[in-house]
Image (cartoon, rainbow, N blue to C red; front, side, top):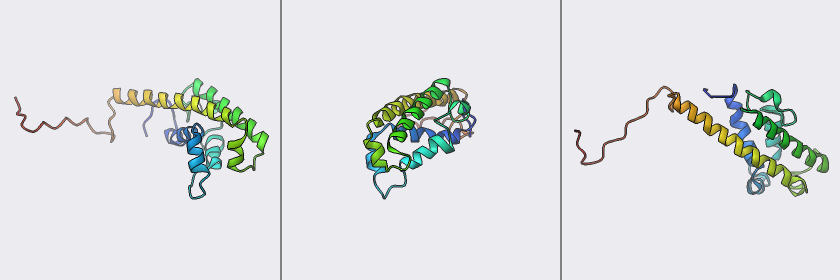
Length: 154
């Protein structure tokens, strides 16, 4: 996989949606609290703290799954906000308890700020790939538009 700014772009494909989920109270209620859904808070926490980053200490992930120092700083803020809620409700609390905790709004706010930066930085990276001549699927040239019906070649 080709990417500008991260050595592990496939890891980032897990990190960004996890952060976006933390930024969306509607998603949390509709998905995490639905027992028929696969994703829950535990899944998101494993993505961001164990598997593809470490929100408690994100600096080593710079250049791996995080692109910039700003992303590292914002991820650390998210880790701090989440840690405060976890300390308040307990690590074994149900998702409902996390979402109802007074500090949960700080988690959502921190995630929202980080999500905006992650997505903006991904757009910049995509633009750089496009400017460098990469097309999707890789190794293809941009297709020329089909001539309109009734149009004649000069």
